[in-house]
Picture 1 (tube, rainbow, N blue to C red):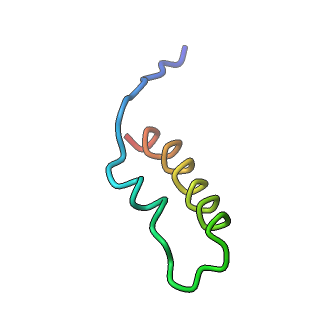
Picture 2 (picture 1 turned 180 degrees about the vertical axis):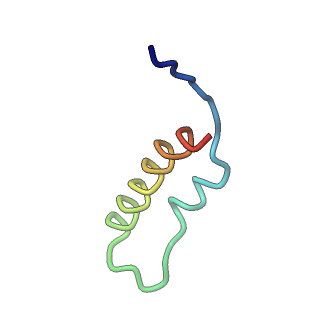
Length: 50
């Protein structure tokens, strides 16, 4: 039987990361979508690493 541990946490600085503008960015929508994918990956990987 496997045991699953549920964690609650907050990644500080995510809002600044998501909405910071990159110089010369071609499309802000694409930039936001890409950064959102990174945050999703972090939220899946970090609890497993703990």
